[in-house]
Image 1 (cartoon, rainbow, N blue to C red):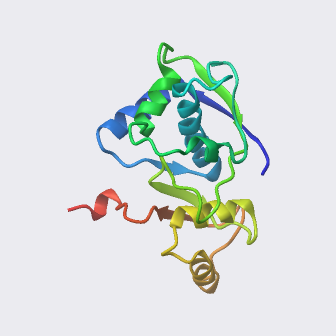
Image 2 (image 1 turned 135 degrees about the horizontal axis):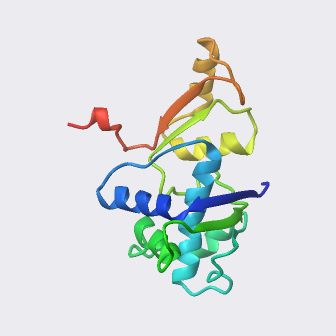
Amino acid sequence: MHAEHFYVNVGELRSIVKAMEAGKPIAVVGTTSTRTLESLYWLGVKRLRGISGSDDTKQLELGQFEWRGLSVADPSITAVTSFKALIDGMSDDEILIGQTSLMITPNSYNFKVIDHLVTNFHAPDSTLMLLVSAFLGKQNDVTTIYEEAQNRGYRFLSFGDACLFSRPGVQLPSERK
């Protein structure tokens, strides 16, 4: 999995924390945004656990499967707790800078931050298709969804049609009663 660089404004991350504290679902546009927010969760976990290198606010880094070593169940480390650990003592105009090689694959990765994902239809056998498949979970067959999109004439890849996926069990605000 290739590394992607990210730059996240602390004020924006603080807004995301406030939305999560208010119980609002988190919707992102794109797989890069997804990987960034999910990576920031794990980087916050590293900081909370005092793992070497996690105190550098100038350059944060997450390896491809590094999350596996961090994923020991600790229900007290929520996305809110993790993000707050990253931005504590920082001003809203500061920027978190880093890179992530986070590899999100089906049947192993459990999303910590993202509830809804707007993305395009990705190429089969790509790492991005794995991310979407992991996001949809076991009960949703991404192959069937993509075949239906193709049958309906949807366009694929970077300049194709967009779609909205929701994590299993998470409703859109319009679906809530």
